[in-house]
Image (cartoon, rainbow, N blue to C red; front, top):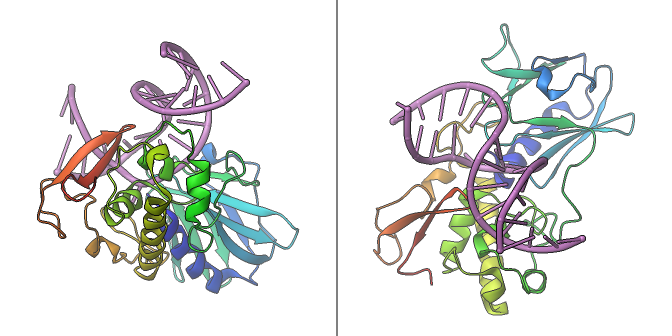
Length: 259
DNA sequence: CCCTATGTTCCCAA
DNA sequence: CTTGGGAACATAGG
């Protein structure tokens, strides 16, 4: 469920609460996460985001890397009793309890960042460069949508925000990545920076179950132009939003203004 | 029963 | 060997 804006939201909220604090107790509830990692007794030095991964840096020089995948959530409770439903691990601090909740159990914990290889763009909020995208996309036969979602090229963009970015950039999602001109990549850069930053301000997109660290819904669902709007009129041109499948993912676009 | 779901990884064919 | 597409993972909801 979480893409860059959602993870960035959790990162900022968590940083304010746990940096400088000691982990009093760390409990793995879902053993699928691996029983080896334990940060009990360590002090949190920093909380950072890399792509869609959240990193909790501790005073022994290590970092706990959490990837929430599809349905992972983090919940902070100052006062607490029973575990929340679908809790997968908990970390107890002097001022509250942090729980990872994940019904589908796809979330992963590790010590190392798991990006496949060196990414071209590590943080699209800051580093997004149209020239890089143009260069890297030369000779690629995949669609521009698959390209934007491929974490090896750009880390952090997922299905919802790709659809929104391509709509704002006026690009058909099935265009081959190699067919885009530099000028078209500039449109992608502008759209991505605006949308991702706005989505962070909005604390993410709550379509179904996304909640921030305190259980609050995001606000970016009110800004969506195409995602989950199949058969509805395009806000820009009044064409009808189409829904197709690309690599098995629901893809929404306006066939009238996205060429 | 069917399909869908904000992600990644593995397998296989071209 | 490389690239890209689909299945698998596990669960809930419509």
